[in-house]
Length: 187
Ligand code: HEM
Ligand code: HEM
Image (tube, rainbow, N blue to C red):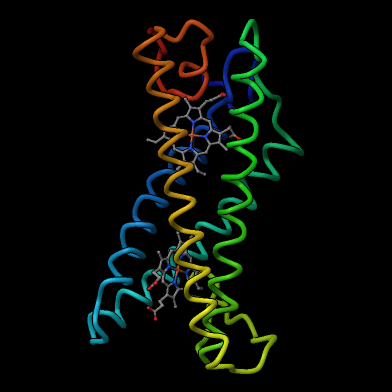
């Protein structure tokens, strides 16, 4: 039977769909962001920026829905027998990942306004600008956007290495992989 909500040993289907769709979107978002960093101004770059803003606001909307699902509706799997240190580090990394995927899109929006640009939520609803254009602050804001994205990349690389370690090196002895994986979850 498909479990939509979390159980003792699974995050549940809805949380898994949020997790894996966001993982894919974030790979795309970071890859296009880093490409933007290295591109000269051109019509192609403008096209990339439009898609980058669309997917950035999509990431933000999905994270908000995911957090609402996680804290209001879902039940969490139990951490059984897992060493306290693993538990603390993974909770800290998850917390920082959530923090960054909320912060970066908001900061990207602020940066776009500094430059006098528009931001449309999911390409549809225009978010009215709350600040004046400021071309002096813009380069600093761009640098913050870039370094936050690098920090996000470092943290999710750490997260992936930890997940692969659980799955392949210790044969998922704490069931950490299984509870976020799709399918019958035989490890
Ligand atoms: C998690 C989501 C996001 C990530 C990981 C991300 C990452 C990046 C990175 C790495 C760059 C290159 C920075 C540089 O050129 O030095 C970039 C550029 C940019 N980002 Fe984002 N971004 C995200 C969301 C957003 C959002 C939501 C907006 C605005 C709505 C936005 C607006 C921009 C703009 C306008 C640029 C181009 C700046 C330029 O080169 O002129 N970003 N982003
Ligand atoms: C290929 C990439 C990824 C793999 C293999 C992976 C693997 C996993 C696994 C196995 C878990 C369960 C851990 C546990 O229950 O303690 C998990 C949870 C989690 N992952 Fe990932 N992950 C990936 C990408 C990402 C990305 C890009 C993010 C960034 C937001 C992320 C954020 C989280 C969070 C916040 C949790 C805690 C559960 C929750 O709040 O929904 N993951 N991940």
